[in-house]
Amino acid sequence: MSEQQATAVTQSAIAEMAASLPMQDRQDFDDVTRGFVGRSEQRRITADDGRVVWDLDAYDFLRGADAPDTANPSLWRQGQLLIEDGLFEVVPGIYQLRGFDLSVMSVIEGETGVIVIDPLISSETAAAAFALYAEHRGTRPVKAMIYTHSHIDHFGGVKGIITQEQVDAGEVQVVAPEGFLHHAIAENVFAGTAMIRRSGYMYGAALDRGPAGQIGAGLGQTTSTGSASLIAPTLEVRATGETHVIDGVEIVFQVTPGTEAPAEMNFYFPQHRALCTAENTSHTLHNILTIRGAVVRDAHAWAHYLTETIEMWGDQLDVVFASHHWPTWGRERAVEFLAMQRDMYLYLHDQTLRMLNQGYTGPEIAEVLETPPALEAQWHTHGYYGSVSHNVKAIYQRYMGWYDANPANLWPHPPEAGAVRHVAAMGGRDGALAVARQAWDDGDYRWCAEVGKYLVFADATDIEAGALLADAFEQLGFGAENGTWRNAFLAGATELRSGNFGTPVSTTPDILKALSVSQVFDSIAVRIDGPRAWDEYLRVAWRITDEDTTYLIELRNGALHHRTVADAPDDVTTFALTRLSLIGLVTGTLELGTAMADGTVAIDGDPAVLGRLVALLAPVDPDFNIVIP
Ligand SMILES: [Zn+2]
Image 1 (cartoon, rainbow, N blue to C red):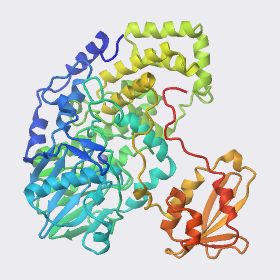
Image 2 (tube, rainbow, N blue to C red):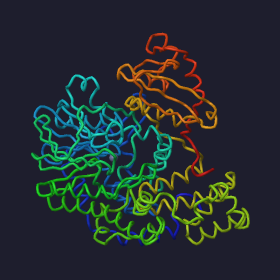
Image 3 (cartoon, rainbow, N blue to C red):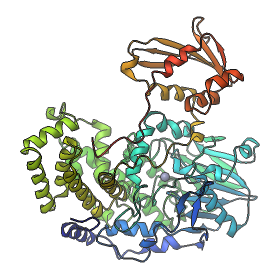
């Protein structure tokens, strides 16, 4: 089997699936170009160092082309919609910049300036998008920035549009849901490194674009790779019904914590009869649990809040828009869209619970659960980003955890040890390879991938087995309707064929500046090398001068915990410094010796204790293996 061809089995599976698609429904193609104002002539967006961080023509091969054998036509179609880039008028006074990043930025025109909603991931893409707006609508001052929720594709580009100085001077208000700042960086504190490595699989950033490669991520085409930033909110929205008038524009808010993000909100513009639903609705089935890894979301709360949304504004709505995809116009269509999205999440939730209470496990429910034909007939309920399969398993996980109650699954051998035994049981390496080849010949690529996984985990140097596993992954990717599944399968194939591509993007220091002191100590604690720290005992006090608070950290039994204290104990070394200096020390932008010399850090006691702590920290590995042991 040579690379980059779909087998007859994959082709017929795709054809069978395609026959059920509502291809006659072309409404999305009208909506995605409706209100088009203009397109950016600058097609490649670059960073200061000349590196391309976004290419508006990277997916030109999708334009007007029929889906090839190597792509699911439903996902291909979604990509065609997502690459419609430019400035679009939603209604007079509300504009969107689409196609500039994974997410969409909206601009609301006020009396003297504009309100910007969700400034994309990178400063570079945000600046380029906003420049297109200014080109057509004139240069208007930004009076407010609204972050709909705590995910980086909704705030990372903020410094491409406004500065911290403007915010400090009171020229620009920054509005976000309560808890935004904590949650915006909380994921980086505990599992950030692993999530970012896994994001490379989910978004396919390292994959070639092309008919047999990356064709999108369903929610947007992929993530931009410029510099991410963060400016803290100056106004936190706490309650549903809260109303603010900004630059003459009235905005009514609905807080929706624990939906698509832990801190998220919808809001309504009465003067425009327009509703922004953040990321609580989109033109895809969204994730209850994203495959890059995350804390599982609450499908039940998600549905509940959408019911509330419809109750609040369903009778006074001309358009609903969000921070991904294109708007839906007309009251009837908009309400039906909201209701269908709500029904989808609630159906998945309730039916998973029904079956779980009948004794089915996550993988069993995921395999058989069908969505109602009326939902199947909608494009926006299809799983381009989330999938019924992995969402159902996520709902099971939320309620029941990883264990399915079968004791055989309570204490199995871990992957490598298990792989060796599986391979031995299949008659050794040659026997197992024959099983995998038979699965390939049968077109059972799921089984081929499973047996291939055992072979590679039993012997990572087995080139033949690795090649077969890569081929199986590739066929699974070609057939997938879900963009993140396709990316994950093709990423696995790519790493098996040409080695580990590592982590294409890294966390930006600017965002880490928003860490709270408590989050800083948590981030240190999860890097303590447990066994090396078993016999260590140490305490350090930290007086955070700009917060007038003293923290005591204590390491015992390999666990580093922290708490605030009224005064540092006499026998403990105290470091006095600002919160930002503490972050500088931890992230390596500030060197302790220099900081002590110039008075940035004042020390009372023996500073050597810090060296003992630092010596116990283990490095993270942003390039860990995934498809090989
Ligand atoms: Zn988003």
